[in-house]
Amino acid sequence: VAYHHSGLSYAVRAGVIEPLAKAGQLRAVVATMGLAAGINFSLRSVVLAGDSYRRDQVEVPLRPDEILQMVGRAGRRGIDELGYFLVSANGLRLREGYPAQLARSGMVDWAALLGIMQGAAETGAEPFLAAVKVQERLFTTKPIHLGVESSLLHPDKSCGLQTDAERARHVRRKVREMLNSRGEWEPLPKNTEVPLGDIRVGPRFTRVDDHGRESHRRPDVEPGVPLDLRPLLSEPDAIEKVGTGTLTPLSEPGVEPVIYGRAISVAEVIDGDRLLIAKWIRRLTNWDSRQTTRELWRGQLEPLITDRLGRQRLDVVGFDFKRTKVVALVSLARQTMHVPVDRHGVPLWHPQERQVTPPDCSRCDLVETCRALPTGTGTALLWKRLRLVDERGVPTRRGRIVSYFSAGVGLAVAAALEDDRYPLDELVYDLANLDAGFRFCREEDRFAGRLAVVCREAYGVQSVNGYLENGLPPKYGSGAEVVVAGIHKNPASKAAFITPWLGDGDVDRVIIEWRSLMRQIAHAPELDWSRWRDLQYLARAILHETESPTMTELPRLTYLQSQRIEHRLQLRRH
Image 1: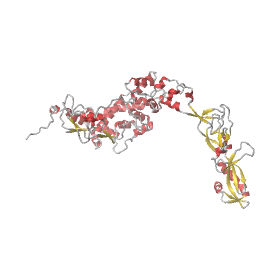
Image 2: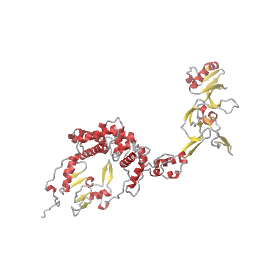
Image 3: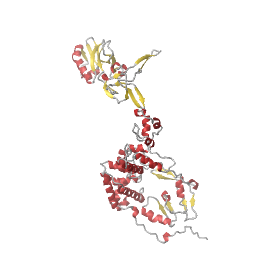
Image 4: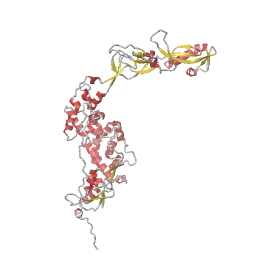
């Protein structure tokens, strides 16, 4: 009787259990799904003890093809005549297992295509075109596009965009334009802080309907004819929320346009010649007395109020003594407002606007073609967003590193190398986390570690099927770097890392994957980058210093152990 699972060491699995099982020496094997993944031996009877398994702390039900694969261990063609599937209480039946419908994966092989594009760029060919030609030659019932196919058919266009998604989004984009001071349409600029005295308002007229209600609208203007502008301070609606106090005309009667300012109450008239100073004025001027005379007011308080309000960009035009109060007439000319400034330097309040298609699209004959393109982010645009290729499709330094590895490994290696503060003698061990999964972190954060930090600094929290999950390679898991570094420095310390949650086989597997990555780095093409060359040097040194668990000397089976035996029970008859 034996058990078989991925937590066993390579020596136990490949040196003891699997040879004995192939020789028919084992009566019973309790195993996980890994036993059915292609090991060439049979067991006469199979029973499935469960209908699901755990993966990354998630309970996953068995798929029909997985059921069929495991049931297939019952008997082997050329070895057994019959095989038996035993039904248990979980309700699984033989009819529930059937082959999966095979279909080509919709994923794009980034490494292969980026390598082809680099070769095309070195020979002077079009990189995107070379990638599309290779992709079209792959067998598939449903074409897998890179997102540059239409753009390659019409390369020389005024927009200069090289991917289909960029063109589709560009043609749908609306450009906001405003009518400037000279009657010309121009792109609406960002608002700028401008004093109210410099801002101008365009023409408008007032219409009175049948019910006596007034409505304001802009009259139609001829393009190219300068607008009839007037000061913003002559428009009460525009400055009604600026400053405090009551809006009041500041210009002389009969003078057009009428300039408005604010009338602010500063004191009350009491008992003829005496004034009660407003509380906010006393605070503004640090005046101790609550009351004063008119003479003292004119001699000391008026200059003081004028100075203090001037510091707040409120220029006092004068003081008006009314029957019951005194008001300060202040100008709002130095108060500011954020408005667009046209190309002629004229600030405009609420200029007339319109939305139009981009200028380059209005002159292009492919507008309808671009409108029909999908706006979804294609592979080519994704490469540009991740800075793997430049505008022409030539792989960048980061893109060339990615082309040396499969899946998201290259993205992590490139991000780490780009951070000059990341020591390479730490990085070589941290790379073990790229295939560690959830087993090594225990109760800690699976996505911790410096390698995770530099990946998210480079790629944010983007997710790309097969390459990134929230900015990290899909199989990333922290904790493996401690195990790998410890065993590298002291191979005899392996037993210290074995726990109920981390088996011998888990440690062996992560070391095998780590050494495989070191071999990829050591034998990858050279690059004119000192950090890449230094990493290759460290990888070669590690390969000379360490040994793969698969190099274990396995014992030979004895003659009797290599012979198939009959497992039928011989029951004595009484």
